[in-house]
Image (cartoon, rainbow, N blue to C red; front, side):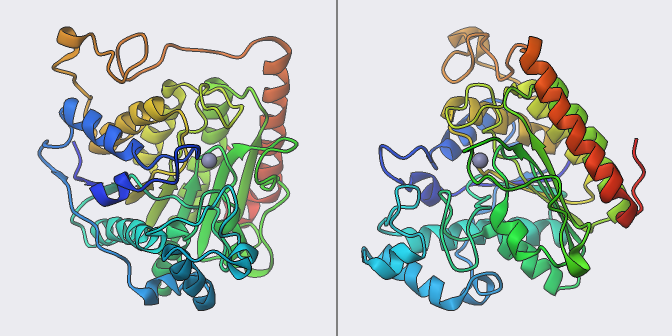
Length: 377
Ligand SMILES: [Zn+2]
């Protein structure tokens, strides 16, 4: 087992984007309950610290102060054209009462995770309500208002630390990539779906950074129907060799579970098996790990997968003492547990998905591995 921090806040979990909005912070509560039921929360070595709001100075390490002022107004219920011009008040990023306080606290939770792993209180930390990787320096988009990940990276590199950011959410981390595109103090690696009309339509394998940052942005675009086998192999061919070569002090990982086959917003076909394999590998290769929740719009499957993820961070096998009593059906799949059955893509769809992954990996081996001195496996 390993020392791990489970960062949960009821205030964050209770925040609502609205009934019709797919982003449900409540997943955090479902995950907390599942982790508890599976004996993870009160294990030796697990700590459960309460987050506090981030300081304004930390928010300004990433965001423009004028934009933060707009967010503050939006949080008080204002609604006008200046806000809309900054992406606040769109269907994706509605004006919501309490918005500023919610984001301040979510950022504080990610920064708490970073503090805990950097000061040795824990080897790994998981902030369930975080991973807002689409928020820009001066605008909101893709359900994201404040970029907790970008703020954490900015703070770490200001402190002289080497940071790797690994993003396994189904969507490309455009907000983080844009901010650090010319910077070699953070290595950003993202695996994501890329297809016509699929948000945010960035993250091609040819996007590898500029100037000092050339080679420090890595994108693995994947085609619809990518399954566990294709995904895990692509991850293995890219992420561990890059981390080994870059030697970060800390890895921040956005572990959105919207890659799963049942996710209503995406077209990848992972099961909890592929998802868990990748998380376990991240735990092996990261000297210190801070995971943040990110996407995941099949609420119950996301909670299952995040429970498996936290178990991997603790190096414990989740055990359900009540499985025999209630059939394990309350949150689980029809198989009654946290894990899905194996599902593979077949036929032409499989060939196309495999070709897309192979082409991305080849491009990265040819154009990025040399810059970092990484060895292709
Ligand atoms: Zn996503």
